[in-house]
Length: 400
Image (cartoon, rainbow, N blue to C red; front, side, top):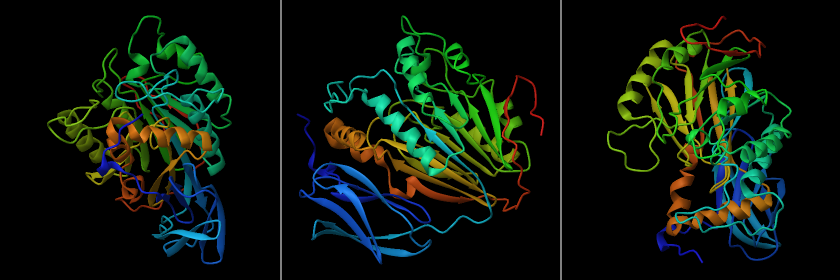
């Protein structure tokens, strides 16, 4: 039985995600019955109240304060006020989804690895949550999915075979980078480059894909057998990829540290290197979003005019995937919880890890999960529909 500290108790009802027309509600510890939400003339059945769940209210007006009344059957249990986001300026260029830290092959969670899935599902929780995220992201309208590392737990062939089951669910283009767990080098593990290439996925250290007048850049930040990350020897190719007249989204596994002393685990790209990377990137193209995984938490900050975010794991609390709406003048990141009921029950349970501290630490605030960022240049660019993936070889530049 997990011991939860008093100050780590999570709210019974919370707004987890919000965009211009949708609000995602998460709940736990409510009375038995059917939970529904009413805002204005819209009433939405969300789900069964007395088990952890996630539901979405759609069709709301943008940039508007909405009062949401939550009822279990006919009993009012909560009243929330939320303001929907303004629609990002400029025409929509494209939609990208990312999924981080799947850890396919993991069988237990928690500080002492004693928390095990008791759902009775035939699919282990990392696979179950990842498949659900893929389905939800495509239903949302993603045109591209980027897997941001720690695809497997220890790089074993059987774990990469679980990734095949994920890819069977994908009907749109895919990009992927490895994480430290994919290059850990344990006995029996296989080379991640071969594992990706044999599945038709590019494995070069830096690659980009054009999406309209924007680019999606994926960069391998791993160091074989190490937990920390680096861009050493790769930064030049990243600069080549973002050096064009348009916005770019740069995705990596390792987070970029912003303090000289590491105050939490795991280690990412060190602060000294981070400072050089962020400065150089902003000098080449300030219209960037840089996003990572690795920390299993949700955070956002602005560095040199760029939006820099971390997105949590798909398979432990809060169990999320991220959607990016790229517009001509701005980008909108919305981190959503995986809503499949058996996944919610598992990821909600993992919030009790480390005495409940994990539930508070990993979630971040709604402002760090659902955030809009205006491109500093504010240029309105001509739309293109090139969707070619280009690998950037050492010492070469990408053709426009």
